[in-house]
Structures are given as C-alpha cells and as structure tokens.
Amino acid sequence: MKFNYRLGLRLVLHVIFSLILLALSISGSISLTEWMIPQEGVRQDNLGLISMYVILGGFMIVFAWSIGKPLYYIIRWINRLANGIYVEPQNHWKIYSSKKKKLKRPYRLFQELFIQLQTLSDTLEKSKQERSRLDEMKKEWIAGISHDLKTPLTYIKGYSSMMLSPQYEWTKEEQTGFLMEIEQKASHMEDLIGDLNISFRLDEQQPPLKREKTDLIELVRRIVVDVTNDPRAARHHLFLETSESHIEARLDVKLLGRALHNLVLNAVLHNPEGTNVNIQIRQDSHLHIMITDDGVGMEEAALDQLFNKYYRGTSTDILSAGTGLGMAIAKQLVLAHGGEIEATSLVHEGTSISVKLPLHN
Image (cartoon, rainbow, N blue to C red):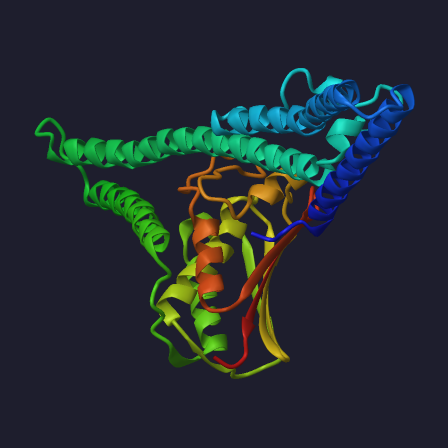
C-alpha cells in the first residue's frame, strides 16, 4: 500500500505544533505562578502542579477531540462500507463548512483519507449497481436462451409428429420441406449450444491457441461464402475487398474463424434485407479486418453494451435469435490472439467493426 506522504507530514506537524503549544502553556503557567506567589514554598509548588494538571488535562481533551472525532467518523464510514452501505454517513454535512463546502478544521487534518474514502465509496456503489444490472441481464438472458432452445424443439417435434402421423400421406416434396425445417432448427440449436460451450471454456481460462500458418485472405473468403449461403443472408449483399492476394499469418484458424464468422453474421442478423455488408482486409504494421454495414446502426447505449456478455439487444424490430454471447466470444478470441477490436455506429447510417491483429506472432 502506498504511503500518503502529505497526510503523514500533516500529522507529524500537527503533533509537533501541539507539543510546542503544550510546552509554551506549561512555561507560561509556571511564570504566572511565580508572579502570583513570589515566595518559594509549598503554596507555589501546589499552584504550579495544579495549573500543570489543568493544562495537561485540557491539552489531552483538545488533542483527543481534534484527532479522535474525525477518526471516529472515518471508522463509522468504514463500518458502513464493510456492511455493504456504500454512501457517506447521514450526518456528513456536519463535517463540511456550509459556506465554502470545505472540510472543517478537525477533519481537514485527514483530507486525503476522506477523498480516498469518497472515491472508494463511489467505486463500490458503481460496482454494486453494475452487478445488479448484470444479474438482471443474466436472468433475462437465461429466459431468452430457454425460449430459443424451446422454440426449435417445438418445430422439430411438430414436423416429426406430422411425418409420423398415419392419418396423412405426405408427398415427397412435403417430406423434403419438413426435413429441411428440422435440419435448420437442429443447426440453430447446435449453434446455441456451441456458443454456450465455448463461452464457459473462455470463462475458465484463456483458450490455448493452436497457431498455424494460414492465408488470412482465404480464411475470410470462406467465412464470407459461408455466411452468404446462410438462408438468413439471402437478401443481404456481402462484399470482400482487399488489395492483397495473399497474407500469411500464424493464427488459430478454428477460433479466429469463429470470431470473424460471429462478426459477419451479426451484421446480417441485426439489419434488414437489402443491407450491404463490406469486409475489407489490409496490411501495414498490423493486420486489419473491417466489417462495415449500411444498416440501421445503433444508439450509444447499445454500442457500449455490444461486447458485453448476456447482451441480446438488437438495432432492429426483429427479435434477437442469438445467445447474446456471440460478440463477447468474438472479442475474447481476438484478444487471445493479441489483437484489438472496436466498434463505431451511427443510427440509420450503419455499424463498423474493426479488428486489428499483430502481424508477427
């Protein structure tokens, strides 16, 4: 713990100044006693002793008041913090002057300590509110995940029951349609469970990266093709732009591919049909991957929560079908590669995600 030199110096000077005043007071009382009783003797000694006791007693009371009163207040404050009450004691107005809003003289001795306690109280209160917010988000997230898992199961069970029903004879085309729906819902469930699995693994520890030489251009190209073939992107327009024909890098293809896939798919899921999604790759001292869309964008409050776990917000009126983990997972995997990720967005103008990776690992 770093020692507060200003507080220590102020305490030392306060003690020294108090002792000097005590010495002067005792010296003055002795001189006054000798002036009142010029003759040496028992009367002079008794009066001198009484005056010294009175001065010492008064000094101890004043010193204890000047030191003990603020210390008692500080102890009360610390006890409140220990009990989870992260605000200053209720009668805090008594320690401040009403005019200048400064600490009164006895409390001014511990000014730095009061500032640090106030900072600690504010930090703990913000943390408490943040925990409450995350707990509420977690409850909503669990309810959403339960719904997201239940919905495809309902479809799968319904189509399976229809196909197995002896009351109807389905045509080949109808059976194929049912099976396609079942496969799509099963794939959606697989994605949900995959996100949950990788999220729990990332919570426990940073994933060991299996780096291998790979062509970043080809990796991103495959991801763009995969997202383009997704039925949910059928009416979105995806473009890949790069001035490089080949960029060799040592990356964990599986994990980084998962992160980039989440980012590109997110630009599709949270924007209406007809949105253009542009993926740019460039190389300088770092590797840069920009995923930009001209969709609906998002407000600052949503942007601040974008990479937070359990956030399932969406910038459109379409309900989010994701786990609320995709963007958080993407950020964790980019950071695991020693990279950085940032997002900018303007409502009705679109969103841009920037991924920066080290060129040499």
